[in-house]
Image 1 (cartoon, rainbow, N blue to C red):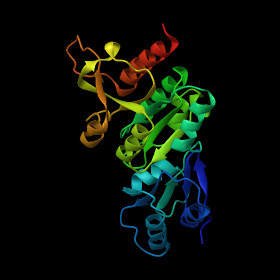
Image 2 (cartoon, rainbow, N blue to C red):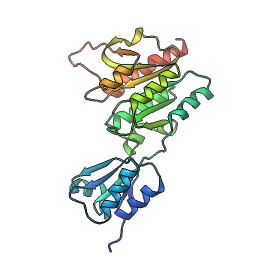
Image 3 (cartoon, one colour):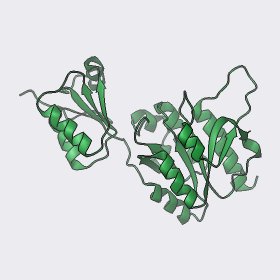
Image 4 (cartoon, one colour):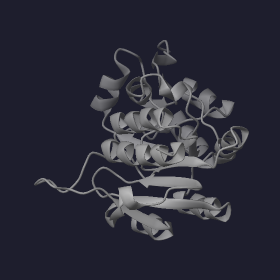
Length: 252
C-alpha cells in the first residue's frame, strides 16, 4: 500500500484513512472533496460518515484535487479544515455582555470569496464588532487565505458558523438586537440610527442578501452610488457601514 500523507498545507487533510479519522475525531471540517468517479472501497464509508455528521461533500475534478494536494497521495479525497476554531453565537453575545456593550454583530450571507471574508473580519475587529456569523453552506470558511487577509484580526474575532442564517436572525431579534441589511434599495446609511444591539447583514458578492434573509431584517440601508457602476465590493461596503456604527457608538 502506498504511503499516505495526512496533511499538505495549513487547511488540507488528504488521504482516505486520514480523512476518516479526522471525521471520527469530531473536529470542525469545512467540507470534504471527492474526485469525480471515485465510488469504490472506503470512499463509500467517507460519504456515509459525512452525511451522518452533516459535513458538506464537494465533487471536484481529479486534476483540481491533484493541484490542491501538490505531490501528496490524496487517494481521491481531501478535507478542508478551518485554520481557527469557531465560536458560537452565544459566545459572541457573552463577549458583548462582558464588555458591558450592546451587541454589535456582522452577519455574512453566503460570502464566497476568501479575500472578502478576511477583509470583513479585519474591519469588524477594527471597528469594535463583537463577532461575525457565517453560514455552514454556500460560504467560504476560515481557510488560510481568510486568515492571511484578516492580517491577524482572526485571532481576536469570534466567528460563529451556523446552519441557518434566517433562524439566527429570528433569535437575535428576540434579544432586542436590530438587524440591518446592507442593500441597494435602502435608506441612507448615514441617516440610520444604529444605537442599541445591532447586527449588520452583508450579502453575496454577486446576488447580494438573499430574499428570505432580507425579509427577516428590520431595516435596509444603502450607500449612495454616484459613478457609473451600481455596487461596491462586499467588504468595502461593509467597512463603511461598520464605521458608521462605530462612530455613533463613540458619540462622534
